[in-house]
Length: 146
Image (cartoon, rainbow, N blue to C red; front, top):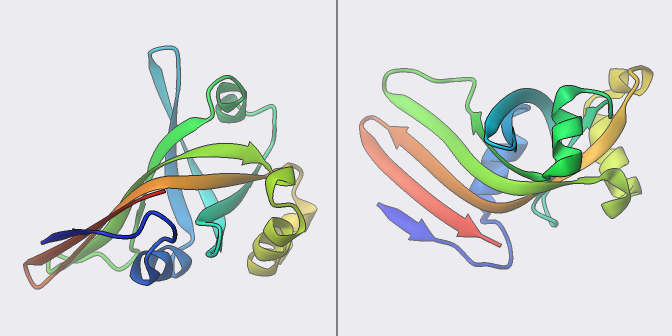
């Protein structure tokens, strides 16, 4: 069963799933070459964004400077044969100035140790999300677009 949610706000169950997890795989492209990287993130629920930290001199941030369109996945850390839960997303990445202090507060409250790690905060604005929850063999899907 698949349902579409409102274009204005990400549905509560999708944002709750994202907020209850910490780790995402993000993919970008340079020309026709794909590149994937992993992030720890915090959530800006009202904005439909996630915040992460990375150095500008990394391969992925150099690629994103040229093409800020990304796709990725977040899966539950509690996967079993009877329960699979996760999202696939598409979005754009911008520098922290887009949301500023709110982004920094969300990230550093979740990961206070990251204040000692060099790098900048980046905001990944979710543009579309497909949420899948399979419990006891019953598949539920929900899609959202900005």
